[in-house]
Amino acid sequence: MSKEKDRQTIFSYIEKNGVFDKDASESTRHSSSVKICRKHSVRVVLDLHGMKSDDAARRVRSFITQSRKKGIREILIIHGKGNHSVNQGEPVLKRMVRDLLEKELHHTIRNYRAALPREGGDGATVVYLR
Image 1 (cartoon, rainbow, N blue to C red):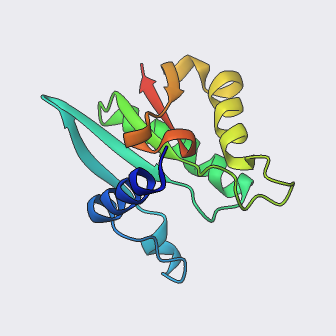
Image 2 (cartoon, helix red, strand yellow; image 1 turned 60 degrees about the horizontal axis):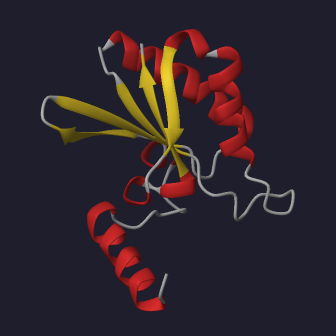
């Protein structure tokens, strides 16, 4: 990708989603949001940025449970790309989320996939709930 295309993508993302404030209070930072994705479909978003693995795992479990109770069928989990992970770039939250989906929560989901670039790319996972 060219630098200009990268720049346009970044500005487009910021324009749509705003800027993440790492100094914001915990209650503000870890809220979820609801977005209309396509006709008659609602997608809820969980942002795990800045969380430790154990806290993030609890949030994912709870988020999936609550989403299923509300009849939500598609969620987006933003875990980041792992650029700031302690173990040399290994994406801790990404691996944790996918392990959790495959090993513990497999009975609650139909499928999951890596997010498309416009959805967050390597930094997010789309989950389809049962």
